[in-house]
Length: 97
Image 1: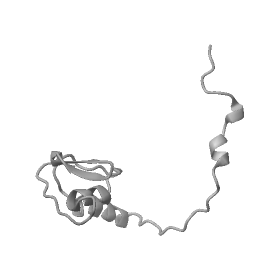
Image 2: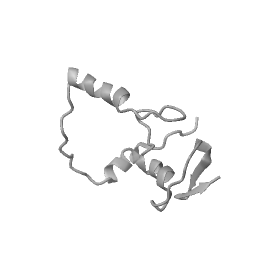
Image 3: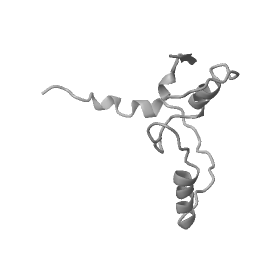
Image 4: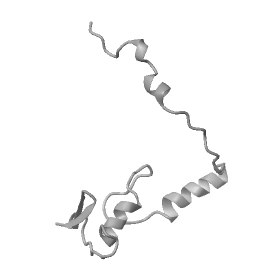
């Protein structure tokens, strides 16, 4: 049989060479009823209803791509969008197709 994962001499190499960063103080999350209320508000009340597929809770689509669609790459011009296929973002510039 061949070697598959490498020798144990390299185990923990990446974790060992990353710099240690102290944990930050965070605000405590609500618990119980208050947490359920927060979930409900996040999922149903403040959810943005738009065209296309529903955005997942862990999606990386952020405000920057929305800003490109609304204001253009330079932040000044307004571009009307009728369909998602009306624009495509390539190399940080908005190009009508």
